Amino acid sequence: MDYRQAAKETLEHIGGRENIVSAAHCATRLRLVIADNAKCSKEALEQVDGVKGVFEASGQLQIIFGTGTVNKVYDEFIALAGISGGSKDDVKQAAAAKQPLPKRMIKTLGDIFVPIIPAIVASGLLMGLLEGLCNAFPAMADSPAYTVFHLFSNAAFVFLPILIAISAAKTFGGNVYLGAVIGMIMIHTDLMNAWAVAGADSVPTADVWFGLYKINLVGYQGHVIPVVIAVWFMSFLEKKLHKIVPEIIDLFVTPLVSVAVTGYLTLTIIGPVFSTIENWVLSGAKALIAVPFGIGGLIIGAFYAPTVVAGVHHMYNALEAGLLSESGVNTWMPIATAANVAQGAACLAVTFKTKKAKTKSVSLPASLSAFLGITEPAIFGVNLRYMTPFIAGCIGGAAGGLVAGIFQIGASAYGITGLFGFLITTKYAGQYGLVMLVAASVAFIATMIMFRDPEDAAPEKKPEAAAENKESEAACDVAAEESNAAEVTICSPLKGNAIPLTEVPDETFAGEILGKGIAIEPSEGIVYAPCDAEVSTLFPTNHAIGLTTNDGVEILIHVGIDTVQLDGKGYKAFVAEGDKVSKGQKLIEFDIAEITAAGYKTVTPVIITNTDDYKEVTGLKSGDTASQDEIIKVVK
Image 1 (cartoon, rainbow, N blue to C red):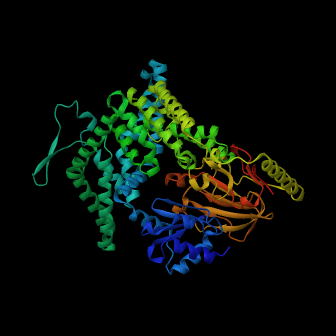
Image 2: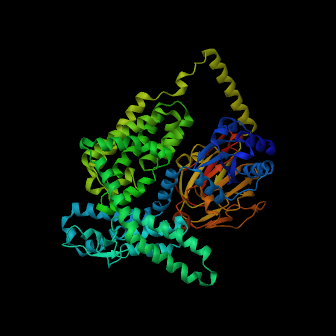
Image 3: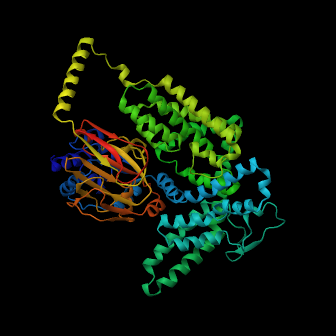
């Protein structure tokens, strides 16, 4: 491959040097932020030698070259453009700055609320299980065990402002402990508990801003947006102070001023103003869901999947957290389940109607993934490609949302949809099951009616020509088998749960653009050599490694999804490029807890990147796998 020519054509097709805002690369992709999308030709880029795919994500133009190639093209690209390469953070920041303000705000909400999902899920599941047990055994509600576990179940909601404050401070670049203090101020025990106001005879007040007006001395239990705004201001103020306060007194002055100024503004302005706005938003959402005859649920269910495609669905995390914090019931989640399950059912229908074996191999596991709440493989890998299944899924989502709206079903947490949602909807288990049944049935039937496989329109071969082709293909197969019938088996580099590559929540891996293989959800943070090989590529952040076997099989092990953004945090390599490694040798260690806490998935694709060189590449198993279990078969 002519790397310089590939870089030259890439530069031309994105509009030249003057159209580049920032450039970097990861283990498989050239990541660019460009100034004017209109000057970029994706169709032309896809024709460049070595390009395996082109797409936009998070404000970045990502051009897939594959492991071992992208770094060489990148070096030529930087030289030809006459620019200095940026880090992944530079590209990420440039991409974020380029996005419209509403989209940046929505992404920020996702960055804040996604990391605290485990805490919400833990409390929500406990709450759901307790409700289910009390429904079955009413006397349990009076037991000491129930009292103790009920305390556990609502802890995350009682102190939710503190959790949000910590996550917000991390997102905005402020001190997380100062952020926690702001959260504590907003629910301090000296303030009247907001949940007790309704039944109180009077509410304490205080004169503020030199007696200009009074504020109610009430905590912000049940509110989330005022906390986010307050911590944003605190982080902004703290960073400004670090720049202007002399270093010798910075340790004392900056925290003091940050907390004192932010705390006073929060209780006197930020809290009262934004809690009112949040109440309007929550009231609007509840009013929409409560529209008579389930019409509100129908509307939400119909348009939920398009918002996933647009990448704005993370804003629902804040809405759901607000609903839970205010009333303890999340009425949004069952409607989201209807939309997700409907997309899964539409994808499943494609499995039955398509004639393409490759499409079947993608659509079936993708549909099962959607039924468990992960819809990206189904939506991006199948439904949007053909469009009619996506539309059918939206119709099914509307039908299921209608049922959810009629019954006003609620959940005790957020972050869980699909079949696992039964765990947090125990009070409405029957109705929740009906929502999924209706959504799935309507979407499945609509897809079976609307979807037409493109191959149906292809002209049929004449019998004589088909017979000749069949004989020719058979002869070639026999010749190939006689000349080279060897197989290579690749072992698992990880301990964990093996899943089909098509279930990976990343369209590049799920679409097998980089090659076929399998993926593993690791249970241990160690990557072992799956066979005797040479380290052909080790990315600087140690999150991905490329190996080449003595037989010429090229293997990519990519630990986590989009974990290049961690810039090496949580990873440690024990080998270097060019090293010869033996089967079972330790290659990389990674911290599962740290990666997960940062909001990234640890699912690890194991890919044969030169798949096209072989007759067959097959994943051998799904389910629990130990290191050195056989997971991939390569037929030469």
